[in-house]
Length: 463
Image 1: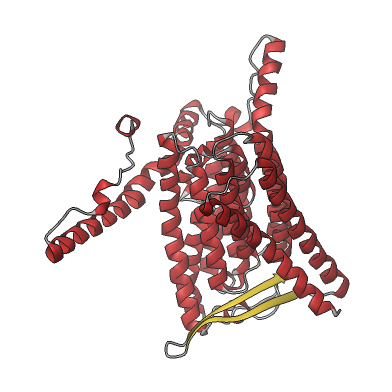
Image 2: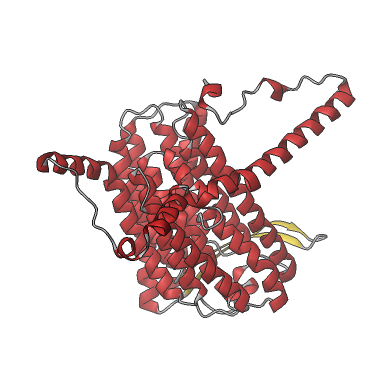
Protein backbone atom coordinates (compact mmCIF):
# COMPACT_ATOMS: atom_id res chain seq x y z
CA UNK A 1 0.00 0.00 0.00
CA UNK A 2 1.43 3.38 -1.03
CA UNK A 3 1.73 6.27 1.39
CA UNK A 4 -0.87 8.36 -0.48
CA UNK A 5 -3.46 5.57 -0.30
CA UNK A 6 -2.74 5.08 3.41
CA UNK A 7 -3.18 8.80 4.08
CA UNK A 8 -6.44 8.81 2.14
CA UNK A 9 -7.81 5.88 4.14
CA UNK A 10 -6.81 7.48 7.44
CA UNK A 11 -8.39 10.78 6.37
CA UNK A 12 -11.64 9.10 5.42
CA UNK A 13 -11.62 7.33 8.78
CA UNK A 14 -11.21 10.67 10.57
CA UNK A 15 -14.23 12.05 8.72
CA UNK A 16 -16.27 8.85 8.69
CA UNK A 17 -16.13 8.06 12.41
CA UNK A 18 -18.09 11.13 13.66
CA UNK A 19 -20.40 10.92 10.66
CA UNK A 20 -21.31 7.32 11.52
CA UNK A 21 -21.89 8.22 15.17
CA UNK A 22 -24.18 11.15 14.37
CA UNK A 23 -26.10 9.18 11.74
CA UNK A 24 -26.55 6.19 14.06
CA UNK A 25 -27.77 8.21 17.04
CA UNK A 26 -29.99 10.31 14.78
CA UNK A 27 -31.69 7.34 13.14
CA UNK A 28 -32.18 5.55 16.46
CA UNK A 29 -33.69 8.69 17.97
CA UNK A 30 -36.04 9.24 15.02
CA UNK A 31 -37.22 5.63 15.21
CA UNK A 32 -37.80 5.96 18.95
CA UNK A 33 -35.57 3.01 19.81
CA UNK A 34 -34.38 3.26 23.43
CA UNK A 35 -30.67 2.82 24.04
CA UNK A 36 -28.88 2.12 27.27
CA UNK A 37 -26.53 4.76 28.61
CA UNK A 38 -23.65 2.30 28.49
CA UNK A 39 -24.24 1.63 24.79
CA UNK A 40 -24.25 5.34 23.93
CA UNK A 41 -21.15 6.00 26.02
CA UNK A 42 -19.23 3.11 24.49
CA UNK A 43 -20.21 4.11 20.94
CA UNK A 44 -19.03 7.67 21.58
CA UNK A 45 -15.79 6.45 23.14
CA UNK A 46 -15.06 4.08 20.24
CA UNK A 47 -15.76 6.86 17.73
CA UNK A 48 -13.47 9.39 19.38
CA UNK A 49 -10.70 6.84 19.88
CA UNK A 50 -10.96 5.75 16.23
CA UNK A 51 -10.80 9.32 15.00
CA UNK A 52 -7.97 10.20 17.38
CA UNK A 53 -5.84 7.20 16.35
CA UNK A 54 -6.43 7.96 12.66
CA UNK A 55 -5.53 11.63 13.13
CA UNK A 56 -2.37 10.70 15.02
CA UNK A 57 -1.54 8.30 12.18
CA UNK A 58 -1.88 11.14 9.68
CA UNK A 59 0.40 13.30 11.81
CA UNK A 60 3.00 10.53 12.08
CA UNK A 61 3.02 9.93 8.31
CA UNK A 62 3.27 13.65 7.57
CA UNK A 63 6.19 14.06 9.97
CA UNK A 64 7.93 11.00 8.56
CA UNK A 65 7.53 11.89 4.90
CA UNK A 66 7.79 15.66 5.29
CA UNK A 67 4.38 16.15 3.69
CA UNK A 68 2.63 19.39 4.64
CA UNK A 69 -0.52 19.18 2.55
CA UNK A 70 -2.82 16.14 2.20
CA UNK A 71 -5.95 16.91 0.12
CA UNK A 72 -8.97 14.59 0.07
CA UNK A 73 -10.94 15.46 -3.07
CA UNK A 74 -14.44 13.98 -3.32
CA UNK A 75 -15.37 15.85 -6.51
CA UNK A 76 -18.27 18.13 -7.42
CA UNK A 77 -21.58 17.22 -5.82
CA UNK A 78 -23.47 20.07 -7.47
CA UNK A 79 -22.52 21.47 -10.87
CA UNK A 80 -24.58 24.19 -12.59
CA UNK A 81 -22.71 25.16 -15.75
CA UNK A 82 -25.15 27.91 -16.76
CA UNK A 83 -24.51 29.76 -13.49
CA UNK A 84 -20.83 28.82 -13.32
CA UNK A 85 -21.46 27.35 -9.89
CA UNK A 86 -20.38 24.04 -8.39
CA UNK A 87 -20.33 22.67 -4.86
CA UNK A 88 -16.92 21.08 -4.47
CA UNK A 89 -16.36 18.66 -1.58
CA UNK A 90 -12.75 18.75 -0.49
CA UNK A 91 -10.93 18.28 2.80
CA UNK A 92 -7.37 19.29 3.64
CA UNK A 93 -5.00 18.01 6.30
CA UNK A 94 -2.14 20.41 6.89
CA UNK A 95 -0.23 21.99 9.78
CA UNK A 96 -3.31 23.94 10.82
CA UNK A 97 -6.08 21.37 10.51
CA UNK A 98 -4.29 18.28 11.88
CA UNK A 99 -3.55 19.77 15.35
CA UNK A 100 -7.14 21.00 15.61
CA UNK A 101 -8.58 17.63 14.58
CA UNK A 102 -6.43 15.85 17.18
CA UNK A 103 -7.45 18.39 19.82
CA UNK A 104 -11.13 17.92 18.90
CA UNK A 105 -11.08 14.15 19.29
CA UNK A 106 -8.96 14.31 22.45
CA UNK A 107 -11.15 16.82 24.30
CA UNK A 108 -14.45 15.42 23.02
CA UNK A 109 -13.44 11.94 24.16
CA UNK A 110 -12.44 13.24 27.59
CA UNK A 111 -15.64 15.20 28.05
CA UNK A 112 -17.85 12.35 26.79
CA UNK A 113 -16.32 10.05 29.41
CA UNK A 114 -17.01 12.72 32.05
CA UNK A 115 -20.57 13.25 30.80
CA UNK A 116 -21.50 9.56 30.95
CA UNK A 117 -21.25 9.87 34.75
CA UNK A 118 -22.21 13.53 35.14
CA UNK A 119 -25.58 13.08 33.36
CA UNK A 120 -26.24 9.56 34.64
CA UNK A 121 -30.01 8.85 34.66
CA UNK A 122 -30.83 12.30 33.25
CA UNK A 123 -33.99 12.23 31.08
CA UNK A 124 -32.12 13.99 28.24
CA UNK A 125 -29.06 11.71 28.23
CA UNK A 126 -29.63 10.46 24.67
CA UNK A 127 -30.52 13.94 23.43
CA UNK A 128 -27.29 15.34 24.86
CA UNK A 129 -25.11 12.79 23.10
CA UNK A 130 -27.00 13.23 19.84
CA UNK A 131 -26.30 16.96 19.88
CA UNK A 132 -22.78 16.25 21.11
CA UNK A 133 -22.13 13.99 18.11
CA UNK A 134 -23.44 16.78 15.86
CA UNK A 135 -20.94 19.15 17.44
CA UNK A 136 -18.09 16.64 17.02
CA UNK A 137 -18.93 16.21 13.34
CA UNK A 138 -19.20 19.98 12.85
CA UNK A 139 -15.81 20.62 14.45
CA UNK A 140 -14.06 17.95 12.36
CA UNK A 141 -15.69 19.19 9.15
CA UNK A 142 -14.87 22.84 9.95
CA UNK A 143 -11.23 22.26 10.81
CA UNK A 144 -10.52 19.88 7.91
CA UNK A 145 -12.52 21.86 5.32
CA UNK A 146 -10.76 22.53 2.04
CA UNK A 147 -13.44 24.84 0.62
CA UNK A 148 -15.38 27.77 2.03
CA UNK A 149 -18.68 25.90 1.53
CA UNK A 150 -17.56 22.90 3.57
CA UNK A 151 -16.26 25.17 6.31
CA UNK A 152 -19.61 26.95 6.42
CA UNK A 153 -21.45 23.61 6.66
CA UNK A 154 -19.40 22.53 9.68
CA UNK A 155 -19.73 26.04 11.11
CA UNK A 156 -23.52 25.69 11.03
CA UNK A 157 -23.49 22.27 12.69
CA UNK A 158 -21.39 23.68 15.53
CA UNK A 159 -23.70 26.68 15.95
CA UNK A 160 -26.90 24.63 15.89
CA UNK A 161 -25.67 22.07 18.42
CA UNK A 162 -24.32 24.86 20.63
CA UNK A 163 -27.62 26.76 20.76
CA UNK A 164 -29.64 23.60 21.37
CA UNK A 165 -27.40 22.48 24.23
CA UNK A 166 -27.67 25.91 25.84
CA UNK A 167 -31.43 25.20 25.90
CA UNK A 168 -30.84 21.64 27.17
CA UNK A 169 -32.94 22.06 30.33
CA UNK A 170 -36.25 22.58 28.53
CA UNK A 171 -38.34 22.55 31.70
CA UNK A 172 -36.98 25.99 32.65
CA UNK A 173 -37.63 29.26 30.84
CA UNK A 174 -34.19 30.85 31.00
CA UNK A 175 -32.28 28.13 29.11
CA UNK A 176 -34.80 28.25 26.24
CA UNK A 177 -34.65 32.06 26.08
CA UNK A 178 -30.87 32.13 26.24
CA UNK A 179 -30.59 29.39 23.63
CA UNK A 180 -32.67 31.52 21.27
CA UNK A 181 -30.48 34.51 22.11
CA UNK A 182 -27.33 32.62 21.23
CA UNK A 183 -28.90 31.42 18.00
CA UNK A 184 -29.91 34.99 17.09
CA UNK A 185 -26.34 36.26 17.42
CA UNK A 186 -25.08 33.29 15.44
CA UNK A 187 -27.53 34.17 12.67
CA UNK A 188 -26.05 37.66 12.37
CA UNK A 189 -22.45 36.47 12.22
CA UNK A 190 -23.33 33.54 9.94
CA UNK A 191 -25.05 35.92 7.54
CA UNK A 192 -21.78 37.87 7.25
CA UNK A 193 -19.92 34.60 6.70
CA UNK A 194 -22.37 33.54 3.97
CA UNK A 195 -22.09 36.87 2.14
CA UNK A 196 -18.29 36.61 2.29
CA UNK A 197 -18.40 33.03 0.99
CA UNK A 198 -20.61 34.05 -1.95
CA UNK A 199 -18.33 36.97 -2.78
CA UNK A 200 -15.19 34.83 -2.63
CA UNK A 201 -16.81 32.15 -4.74
CA UNK A 202 -17.84 34.76 -7.31
CA UNK A 203 -14.39 36.33 -7.55
CA UNK A 204 -12.40 33.10 -7.62
CA UNK A 205 -14.92 30.99 -9.55
CA UNK A 206 -14.84 28.32 -6.83
CA UNK A 207 -14.59 27.95 -3.09
CA UNK A 208 -11.27 26.09 -2.88
CA UNK A 209 -9.02 27.68 -0.25
CA UNK A 210 -5.92 26.74 -2.23
CA UNK A 211 -7.02 28.94 -5.15
CA UNK A 212 -9.10 31.48 -3.31
CA UNK A 213 -7.19 32.74 -0.27
CA UNK A 214 -3.71 31.42 -0.70
CA UNK A 215 -1.08 29.82 -2.86
CA UNK A 216 1.17 27.41 -1.01
CA UNK A 217 0.80 25.51 2.23
CA UNK A 218 -0.23 27.11 5.50
CA UNK A 219 1.18 29.38 6.92
CA UNK A 220 3.27 30.48 3.92
CA UNK A 221 0.37 31.01 1.52
CA UNK A 222 -0.23 34.23 -0.39
CA UNK A 223 -3.68 35.48 -1.26
CA UNK A 224 -4.77 35.65 -4.90
CA UNK A 225 -7.37 38.33 -4.19
CA UNK A 226 -6.84 41.95 -5.08
CA UNK A 227 -6.44 44.50 -2.24
CA UNK A 228 -9.89 45.92 -3.02
CA UNK A 229 -11.50 42.48 -2.82
CA UNK A 230 -9.69 41.79 0.45
CA UNK A 231 -11.06 45.04 1.91
CA UNK A 232 -14.58 44.00 0.95
CA UNK A 233 -14.50 40.43 2.22
CA UNK A 234 -12.14 40.86 5.19
CA UNK A 235 -14.54 42.80 7.48
CA UNK A 236 -17.30 40.26 6.80
CA UNK A 237 -15.08 37.38 7.87
CA UNK A 238 -13.97 39.32 10.95
CA UNK A 239 -17.64 39.83 11.91
CA UNK A 240 -18.23 36.11 11.44
CA UNK A 241 -15.27 35.27 13.69
CA UNK A 242 -16.36 37.83 16.29
CA UNK A 243 -19.86 36.37 16.53
CA UNK A 244 -18.65 32.79 16.88
CA UNK A 245 -15.94 33.62 19.45
CA UNK A 246 -18.05 36.17 21.42
CA UNK A 247 -15.69 39.05 20.67
CA UNK A 248 -16.77 42.66 21.13
CA UNK A 249 -19.55 43.67 20.40
CA UNK A 250 -21.06 40.13 20.52
CA UNK A 251 -19.80 39.27 24.02
CA UNK A 252 -23.23 39.71 25.61
CA UNK A 253 -24.40 36.22 24.79
CA UNK A 254 -21.44 34.45 26.44
CA UNK A 255 -22.72 34.42 30.06
CA UNK A 256 -26.15 33.38 28.81
CA UNK A 257 -24.61 30.29 27.22
CA UNK A 258 -23.63 29.03 30.69
CA UNK A 259 -27.22 27.82 31.15
CA UNK A 260 -26.25 24.56 29.49
CA UNK A 261 -24.74 21.54 31.27
CA UNK A 262 -21.17 21.84 32.51
CA UNK A 263 -19.75 19.38 29.91
CA UNK A 264 -21.18 21.36 26.98
CA UNK A 265 -19.95 24.62 28.53
CA UNK A 266 -16.48 23.12 28.79
CA UNK A 267 -16.27 21.90 25.21
CA UNK A 268 -18.04 24.87 23.61
CA UNK A 269 -17.09 28.05 25.46
CA UNK A 270 -13.96 26.83 27.18
CA UNK A 271 -12.06 24.87 24.56
CA UNK A 272 -13.31 24.32 21.00
CA UNK A 273 -16.25 26.38 19.79
CA UNK A 274 -14.96 29.64 21.29
CA UNK A 275 -11.72 29.19 19.32
CA UNK A 276 -13.44 28.50 16.00
CA UNK A 277 -13.49 32.19 15.11
CA UNK A 278 -9.74 32.37 15.69
CA UNK A 279 -9.33 29.27 13.52
CA UNK A 280 -11.21 31.01 10.70
CA UNK A 281 -8.89 34.01 10.92
CA UNK A 282 -5.87 31.71 10.84
CA UNK A 283 -7.22 29.97 7.75
CA UNK A 284 -7.81 33.24 5.89
CA UNK A 285 -4.73 34.97 7.34
CA UNK A 286 -3.27 35.56 3.83
CA UNK A 287 -6.26 37.84 3.18
CA UNK A 288 -5.66 39.78 6.40
CA UNK A 289 -2.03 40.34 5.49
CA UNK A 290 -3.01 42.18 2.33
CA UNK A 291 -4.28 45.19 4.26
CA UNK A 292 -2.83 47.06 7.21
CA UNK A 293 -6.37 48.15 8.02
CA UNK A 294 -7.58 44.56 8.36
CA UNK A 295 -4.60 43.46 10.43
CA UNK A 296 -4.89 46.53 12.65
CA UNK A 297 -8.63 45.96 13.10
CA UNK A 298 -7.99 42.38 14.22
CA UNK A 299 -5.36 43.55 16.72
CA UNK A 300 -7.60 46.27 18.16
CA UNK A 301 -10.57 43.89 18.35
CA UNK A 302 -8.51 41.26 20.15
CA UNK A 303 -6.93 43.63 22.66
CA UNK A 304 -10.23 45.38 23.42
CA UNK A 305 -11.94 42.02 23.97
CA UNK A 306 -9.11 40.82 26.21
CA UNK A 307 -9.26 43.98 28.36
CA UNK A 308 -13.05 43.85 28.68
CA UNK A 309 -13.16 40.12 29.47
CA UNK A 310 -10.39 40.47 32.04
CA UNK A 311 -12.41 43.07 33.95
CA UNK A 312 -15.69 41.16 33.62
CA UNK A 313 -14.22 37.88 34.83
CA UNK A 314 -13.16 39.47 38.15
CA UNK A 315 -16.68 40.46 39.24
CA UNK A 316 -18.79 37.47 38.17
CA UNK A 317 -20.86 35.84 40.89
CA UNK A 318 -20.68 32.27 39.53
CA UNK A 319 -17.64 30.24 38.62
CA UNK A 320 -18.81 29.21 35.12
CA UNK A 321 -19.32 32.79 33.98
CA UNK A 322 -16.00 33.80 35.53
CA UNK A 323 -14.19 31.02 33.66
CA UNK A 324 -16.05 31.89 30.44
CA UNK A 325 -14.85 35.50 30.56
CA UNK A 326 -11.36 34.35 31.56
CA UNK A 327 -11.38 32.13 28.49
CA UNK A 328 -12.58 35.06 26.38
CA UNK A 329 -9.68 37.20 27.61
CA UNK A 330 -7.22 34.63 26.27
CA UNK A 331 -9.13 34.34 23.01
CA UNK A 332 -8.77 38.11 22.64
CA UNK A 333 -5.00 37.78 23.06
CA UNK A 334 -4.98 34.99 20.46
CA UNK A 335 -6.90 37.20 18.02
CA UNK A 336 -4.35 39.98 18.56
CA UNK A 337 -1.52 37.52 17.89
CA UNK A 338 -3.16 36.60 14.58
CA UNK A 339 -3.41 40.28 13.69
CA UNK A 340 0.31 40.70 14.38
CA UNK A 341 1.05 37.77 12.06
CA UNK A 342 2.22 35.40 14.82
CA UNK A 343 0.45 32.38 13.39
CA UNK A 344 2.36 29.57 15.05
CA UNK A 345 2.26 31.32 18.42
CA UNK A 346 -1.50 31.76 18.07
CA UNK A 347 -1.92 28.08 17.15
CA UNK A 348 0.12 26.84 20.13
CA UNK A 349 -1.68 29.31 22.40
CA UNK A 350 -5.05 27.95 21.29
CA UNK A 351 -4.08 24.32 21.84
CA UNK A 352 -2.73 24.91 25.34
CA UNK A 353 -5.52 27.24 26.37
CA UNK A 354 -8.24 24.81 25.21
CA UNK A 355 -6.81 22.00 27.34
CA UNK A 356 -6.46 24.25 30.39
CA UNK A 357 -10.00 25.66 30.24
CA UNK A 358 -11.51 22.22 29.72
CA UNK A 359 -9.84 20.99 32.89
CA UNK A 360 -10.92 24.07 34.85
CA UNK A 361 -14.58 23.90 33.77
CA UNK A 362 -14.85 20.19 34.46
CA UNK A 363 -13.18 20.73 37.82
CA UNK A 364 -15.47 23.66 38.72
CA UNK A 365 -18.22 21.75 40.63
CA UNK A 366 -15.75 19.86 42.83
CA UNK A 367 -13.63 23.00 43.25
CA UNK A 368 -16.56 24.83 44.82
CA UNK A 369 -17.08 21.97 47.23
CA UNK A 370 -13.38 21.92 48.16
CA UNK A 371 -13.46 25.70 48.66
CA UNK A 372 -16.41 25.44 51.04
CA UNK A 373 -14.76 22.64 53.01
CA UNK A 374 -11.59 24.72 53.33
CA UNK A 375 -13.56 27.70 54.65
CA UNK A 376 -15.37 25.47 57.12
CA UNK A 377 -12.05 24.07 58.32
CA UNK A 378 -10.57 27.56 58.76
CA UNK A 379 -13.73 28.97 60.32
CA UNK A 380 -13.54 32.13 58.17
CA UNK A 381 -14.02 33.36 54.64
CA UNK A 382 -11.03 33.25 52.31
CA UNK A 383 -10.15 36.83 51.35
CA UNK A 384 -8.87 37.76 47.92
CA UNK A 385 -5.44 39.32 47.61
CA UNK A 386 -5.54 42.97 46.57
CA UNK A 387 -4.00 43.19 43.14
CA UNK A 388 -1.80 45.81 41.52
CA UNK A 389 -4.60 47.78 39.85
CA UNK A 390 -6.61 47.90 43.09
CA UNK A 391 -3.69 49.57 44.80
CA UNK A 392 -2.86 52.01 41.96
CA UNK A 393 -6.24 53.20 40.70
CA UNK A 394 -8.25 55.74 42.72
CA UNK A 395 -11.43 54.55 44.43
CA UNK A 396 -13.76 56.59 42.19
CA UNK A 397 -12.35 55.11 38.99
CA UNK A 398 -12.37 51.66 40.53
CA UNK A 399 -16.09 52.03 41.35
CA UNK A 400 -16.87 53.05 37.77
CA UNK A 401 -14.87 50.21 36.32
CA UNK A 402 -16.57 47.82 38.72
CA UNK A 403 -20.01 49.00 37.57
CA UNK A 404 -18.92 48.70 33.94
CA UNK A 405 -17.63 45.16 34.48
CA UNK A 406 -20.62 44.12 36.59
CA UNK A 407 -22.97 45.21 33.79
CA UNK A 408 -20.72 43.25 31.39
CA UNK A 409 -19.86 46.34 29.42
CA UNK A 410 -23.57 47.00 28.72
CA UNK A 411 -23.10 44.73 25.71
CA UNK A 412 -26.15 42.66 26.60
CA UNK A 413 -28.34 45.76 26.52
CA UNK A 414 -26.80 46.82 23.22
CA UNK A 415 -27.35 43.29 21.90
CA UNK A 416 -31.04 43.53 22.77
CA UNK A 417 -31.52 46.99 21.30
CA UNK A 418 -29.46 46.87 18.13
CA UNK A 419 -29.40 43.19 17.11
CA UNK A 420 -32.12 41.08 18.74
CA UNK A 421 -34.97 43.61 18.66
CA UNK A 422 -34.49 44.67 15.00
CA UNK A 423 -34.24 41.03 13.92
CA UNK A 424 -37.35 40.04 15.88
CA UNK A 425 -39.17 43.07 14.47
CA UNK A 426 -38.22 42.04 10.94
CA UNK A 427 -39.48 38.51 11.53
CA UNK A 428 -42.73 39.82 13.02
CA UNK A 429 -43.22 42.06 9.98
CA UNK A 430 -42.66 39.06 7.70
CA UNK A 431 -45.27 37.18 9.73
CA UNK A 432 -47.77 40.02 9.24
CA UNK A 433 -47.10 40.03 5.51
CA UNK A 434 -47.66 36.27 5.44
CA UNK A 435 -50.98 36.63 7.26
CA UNK A 436 -52.20 39.31 4.86
CA UNK A 437 -51.18 37.26 1.83
CA UNK A 438 -52.85 34.13 3.20
CA UNK A 439 -56.02 36.04 4.02
CA UNK A 440 -56.04 37.50 0.52
CA UNK A 441 -55.71 34.05 -1.07
CA UNK A 442 -58.21 32.01 0.97
CA UNK A 443 -59.99 34.53 3.13
CA UNK A 444 -58.93 32.74 6.31
CA UNK A 445 -56.33 34.41 8.53
CA UNK A 446 -56.20 31.52 11.03
CA UNK A 447 -52.72 30.11 10.45
CA UNK A 448 -51.18 27.06 12.00
CA UNK A 449 -48.55 29.34 13.59
CA UNK A 450 -51.33 31.00 15.63
CA UNK A 451 -51.48 27.90 17.82
CA UNK A 452 -47.72 27.72 18.52
CA UNK A 453 -46.75 29.01 22.00
CA UNK A 454 -44.48 32.05 21.98
CA UNK A 455 -41.36 32.12 24.18
CA UNK A 456 -41.51 35.21 26.38
CA UNK A 457 -38.77 37.08 28.17
CA UNK A 458 -40.56 36.94 31.51
CA UNK A 459 -40.64 33.94 33.79
CA UNK A 460 -44.08 34.94 35.10
CA UNK A 461 -45.49 35.06 31.56
CA UNK A 462 -43.87 31.70 30.81
CA UNK A 463 -45.55 30.10 33.82
